[in-house]
Structure formats: C-alpha cells, structure tokens
Image (cartoon, rainbow, N blue to C red; front, side, top):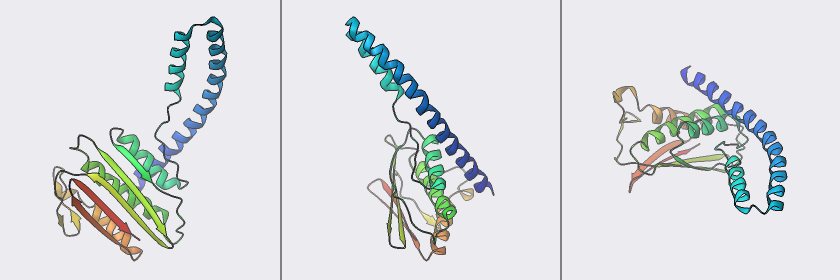
Length: 204
C-alpha cells in the first residue's frame, strides 16, 4: 500500500511536470517573438556585445529539463521521479516502446522502481555517480539491465541483497521483490559486481 501510494504520487508529479512543460512551451514561444524583436534592434544599433549577452540568456532559458517520455505513463512516472530526486546522478536510458500485453504495467513499474532504489543507494559513495538503464524486447521476452558504480561486493542472503543502510535487517528486500515479479512471468533475476560496476539483469 505504501508503494502504491508512492506510485500515485510519482504519477501526479509526472503529469504535473508534463502540464508545466506544455505551459512553458507556450511561454517560450511568446518570449521568442519578443527576443527576435530585441535582437533585430540590437543588430541595427550595432551593439554586438549586448546581442551576445541577449542570446546567452535565451540559451539558458531553453535548456532541456530531465523528463522521461517513453509513452508508458507508469514507467515515465518512475523514471522522471527518480531523476528528479537524484539530480547529481547521470542517468542514461535506453528504453524503446514496449509491446507486452502479457505483463502487467504495474509489475514492470514496481520492478523498475525497486531496481532504481538499489542503484541510487549504490551510487551514494561514488564521485561520479551514474545509472545506465537498458531495456530490450525480443518477441515476448523483455530484458531489463541496470548498471551503477559500487565500491563493495554485495552479498545475498535469503534471496535478498544485504543492505548497507543502518538496520540492514529492515532493508534489502528490493531484489526479493523483483525476483518474485520475474518468476511470475517465467523469468529470472541475476546480478554481478565486477571492476566497480554492479549489473542487475531481469528477464521476463
């Protein structure tokens, strides 16, 4: 129930961001019109330095914000929320349009959310934090692979990773949850940690 509530909050945040981005687009169109008028005036005056300053301000205003739009609202909500909550992490996402009617979208979103929570935790002590997300589909099979830096070789106990958080007995259930989701669709979960990189793979 707590996770579903968090999921609803993520969706609201995502749709709010889309709404704000749409309004921002309309505002930028209006500002662009004014910018062109001002630029033309500065050109006629020959004030090139002022024009350069004017252009730089406009460039800053139109820099893209991190907002994922894959066409799947649940996945978009999870990805957008995680990026928003961890702006210091370099997210690289390769996620095509998925066609998997046999898999409940909520299960895919829950799996991805749990995987990203673990990945964010793994980045905590990294000077160059990153999370690489790759999802592939071949026929009815879907592979989810997530990579992040790690300084310790994780250990698994009773089907779950031993958490590095305080009171580890209350944490580390993400892998167990993800494995159950994968097995629900005749899949499996594997992970490895080599050369400072933790790699999680889930096949469904």
